[in-house]
Length: 329
Length: 103
Image 1: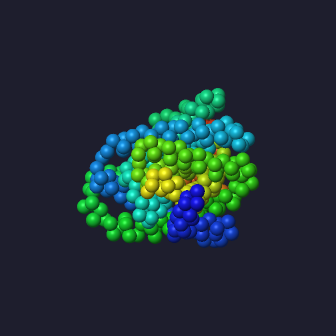
Image 2 (image 1 turned 180 degrees about the vertical axis):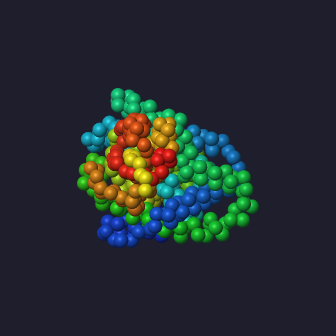
Image 3 (image 1 turned 90 degrees about the vertical axis):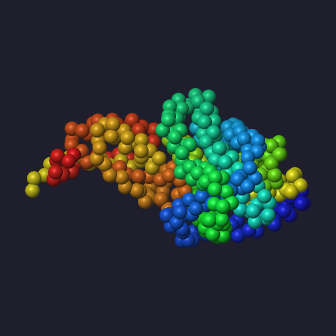
């Protein structure tokens, strides 16, 4: 335990986590600090491109192995399964309605790509290697949770309208949302062009990466802090407990999956991070279409205001430390 | 100058529903509309601002259509088929246009 805590404490002191904390604190203190919307959007495109491309290059260097396919399947299954755990926990800990609980559960089965990017960066800074194909696993885990949430609603007798909203249009929007297209596209380009491709653009995607991530996470800290400040009246103890407990439970699922798959230390840490994270981009949009009766103030505040900061500041260091101890990495 | 009466329909809706709404309008043969981004506002759910939103899920847009009065009911039927379960504001006002053949 002492080893885990000391490793976690060491991982906590990194510029990206501290910049996030700065933004979060600034928002809570009502500072006027802000990042223009277009710049934040541009930075998010840059980060997705860079992380996808690097993952693809790593895959081309190490080659395909069967674990890639098993990891993809495991990721999809985790994304399907975690909403059921989240739903049961929400119903036990909070007084949320079925529709609010189902919509919130969907967020916790899906993933936060920004959390994944941050974890990849912290791992890389610590010199811990991870499988490049974890980028593809992250993309595969985005959507299945949405189907689980709609099934949970249908089972509870309130999902007819939600299920009917799940037409070809919504499925296309979910599967082809901009983040997924860019992440998978850049991954494919990285895999095709390999180290030669990397040599051509590394000045753009390697050296500036951490600096851009710091600025992006400063903005995310501001967004998360502002959201938390505005919705603090909604956050009763049960919801707060869920926002911290669920990522830890998800991480345990990810840990077992990573160990069973035989992933590297970094791979296990990333699988834990993915399972622990909650979506706040793709799933909220799908829920607004399919389950508009669910309250976004609850699921966005939980995912973005509680779980995202928790994962970034405490979760990632803990997941890394546990993965290091249990894999001997 | 000759002017003609028309109806101005303004629909403020979640950004994620924008495409569905405009498709419904087009299927009701309303091919002319203008879309404005919404910077922020306040309603039953409290204050809202575009600043700091990370997702289109929490954004809003306003779709404005100017139509001949007799086409109002088909437009509203089409709009409500989409808006029924969603938050949003629909308002209709009288207006005048100069070139009636365009509406």
